Structure formats: structure tokens, C-alpha cells
Amino acid sequence: MEFDKEFDASGLSCPLPIVKTKKTLAGMTPGQVLRVISTDPGSVSDMPSFMEQSGDTLLEHVKENGKFVFYIKKA
Amino acid sequence: MNARKKADWVAGFQLDYKTLFVKKWSSYMGALLLVMVVLALMISGMFWGVFGGVKFWGDSFNNLIGLGPILGIPKELESWGLHRMSLMNMTLVLGAFCAALLSKEFAINLTPKIEYVWAMLGGSLMGIGAALAGGCTTGGFFNPVLHASPAGWTMWVGLVAGAALGFKLLLWTMENIDWGSAAPPTIAIPDSLKNRFPLLGLMVAVACLVWAVQWIGSDNKQLVTRAVLILAGFAIGFIFHRSRLCFARAFREPFVTGEGEMTKALILALAVGIPLAALLFQKKVIDPYVAIPATFWIGSLLGGLIFGIGMVFAGGCASGSLWRMGEGHVKLWVAMFFFAWMGSTASAMLKKLNLSVIDETNLEIYERTNLGFQAYWPDMIGSWGWTLSLCALLLLLWYGLVRYNESTEKFTLM
Image 1: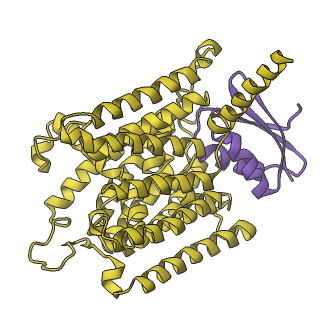
Image 2 (image 1 turned 180 degrees about the vertical axis):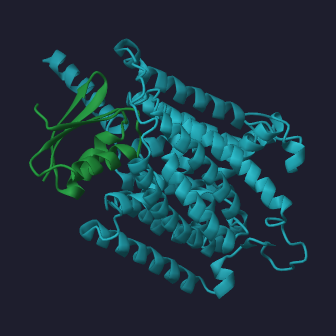
Image 3 (image 1 turned 90 degrees about the vertical axis):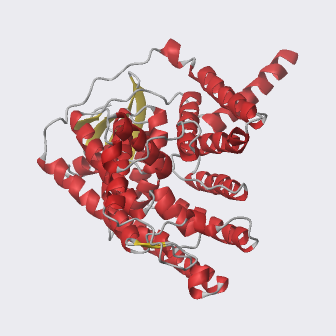
């Protein structure tokens, strides 16, 4: 999947993956896609929860090389 | 036909396994199960606590490095397996470890270097805060609130303020400190090993069960009474991991994303637990004062504030740190070490400074120190009716603020 920006949250645990994702999204324009890589199992449910709260769209969520990868489209 | 029927029922068990041990449980489910275990402990004449065991670990370390005498820590301490809170903490980690294995979520997670610094700082603040409040989020907040003590609500005020302030500080560090932010090496676990995790998890569970059964059947009375703690701690750790319940998140998340699910789950736990606990006190099943620290209100408030800041930097509250240790997050192991060491040191210092020493001249039913006294609402205001109404009001207020914030994000700080 194509993306405009990538942020590697590997090694970070709660709350940092979400906090840094929120921060990164704030600096992007609507419609852009952010790719976030995480190793925290909590992010699997945290990310969709956060999307519900923020109104952004979780386009896809895959596992790559044992890590969780999220594609988020800024609302 | 027979072969297909067989495959169907096997798939049925596999589906249930996934639901129970792989998919995340709802926070509300976790909260209710937690309350059940906590109440079961209370009915057994005991109570759940985390800092007591953590401070004990710190005491052991201080004795090990020779600081014991200077700090006034007793020389002879129980063994880690016999100290009640220490035992529960250890089995909490095991319960979470087991759950993480069953769901294949366990991994040794290293973090960027700067996070270890925050673990040291956060853990230390948690230790100091817990020493002041006479307990952590469990023993200084959750238990006292459950035991109808205003000390719990006072620590609540401190925790809310601390979580907000801590988060603001964390944001500042994210803007201004670049050092040590690089992603760490990932310790890859080969699939062949990962596929064995559920079996390993089962072995951990069976081992703990056998351990508990051995102690229940023991001639040693000490072991018999402690057997329930093995199971309770394990259950709590398991529940926490499956539902990813975290008190730190409950306090912090409204300020971060505005999301209030964890907070509401905690409110639910208290809403159910408080009246049930009240029944136990009324029926004189246990003495509520056992779990109420003599810290109302200065110790609770100041302790809550400092603990709140610390838990944001550490990445977990007391129980949150324990279950994340079980999942393999190295940062929380570091945080726990400093939580323990500073918790022990700060507690000893407070004693030396006469701040937490029990006032022997106080003739009341409750204990008093310079940090506060053991406050129990039914004795203070003389009525259970008013006590429960007050608790209900406070829970409603908390719920109202959180729900309002979920929609408006008025209290979010970023």
C-alpha cells in the first residue's frame, strides 16, 4: 500500500505508539496516509480505538516480519 | 460424514480457544473479573496489594547493598515466596506471562535508550509517591476507595493531576529531547518457538496450580493460608493481560486521546465493588482499617500527584507494570526495579523523618501519622447510607467528566 509518511514505533510501549501517531498525524494534511510500525501487542486494539476517537481511517492492518503495521488515512 | 463431524467439533474448541486466550477481552469484562477476585480475597480475610510487595523487594535490595542499617530497614526479612504481597506480585507476573504465551503475544521487547531513562525516573517517582500515599494505585487508591475511605479519593485527585502534568512533561520531552530515540534491535522469535508458546503457557499454568495444591495440602499453616494468594495473583495477572486493564491508562487516556473506555471500566469495577465490600464490612467479615493507609489527606494527595507523574513516564501503574513485565517489556522491568528501590528508600526516609511513624499518643480507633490518618467514612460521618451516596456521587461525577471529554475532547492536552 502507498503511503506519504512512515513512523517506526518499534520498541515503544503504551502510551507512546498512540501518542506519537497522534502527533505525527497532526502535522499531516487531510487525505495523506501514514504508515506506523509497532511491536507493542497493545497497539492492535489501541489503534482502531484511537481511530474511532479521532475520526481518522484505519485503511489496513497487517503483520510484517513479526511487527504490526498500520496504514492510517488522515481525516 | 463422520470425518466432517469430527473436524467440526475440533474447530469448535479451537474457536473457543481463540475467543478465550487469543482475542483481547473487553475492558469491562476485565474490570468485573478483577473485582470478583479482589472480593474473594477480602472474604478470605486478605486483600490485594502491590506496593507492599514491591517495597519489600526494595528492602531486600537495600539490605543486599548494605544500606539497610543506615535506612533503618530490619535485617531479617521473610523470603520472597512467603511475604504475602511479594508472593502475589510474582504470581501476577506469572499469570500475565502465561496469558501472553497462550496468545503468542510474549516477546522480549527492548526500547529506545531514552525510554530506559524514563523508566528510571518514572519508577523512582512511583516509589516516592507510593511511600507518601501508603500505597500505589492499588493500595493507595483502588483499595481505599473500595474500603469507603476518602484517602482513596484524595489520591484520586493527586493521580488525575499527576497524570495530566506527567503527560504534559512527556510531550515536552518528546519535542525537546532527541537523544536515544532510535528504534532498538528487535529480538526476533522464530516461528518454530512461537508455535510452542501455547504449550509453554499451559505448563506455566499447571505448574502454578500444582504449587498451590501442594501448599494447600501442606502441614505448614503459613503455606496453607498463602496458597490462595498464588491463585489470586495468577488470576489477576491473567485477567489484566487478557483485558489489558491498566489504571495508569484510566487516568491518563482522557488527557491523551480523550478515549475513556479504560476509565469507565475502572468506574464500573468500583461501582460494583463498593456496595459489595460494604456488605462485607457490615457483616464484619473483615476489618476495613486493614487496607486503609494512615495518609488522609496530605500523604494521599501529594503521593498521588508524584505517583501520577511517575506512572506516565514509566508506562504503567503498579499492576500495569507487573503484567507488562510478564509480556516481556524490558522497560517495565527497569521501571519496577527503581519503583522497588526508591519505594523502599523513600519509605525508610519518611520513617526516619518521623513523617510516617504512627502516633502512639493517639487513642482513637484509627491510626494517625504526620502524613494523615486512617479515614473511614462510615465512622467519620456515621452512616452507610450517606457513605454509599457520596461514593455514588463521586463515581457519577467522574463518569460525567470522562464521557463529556470523550465527545468534546475539552480536557485533552495534545
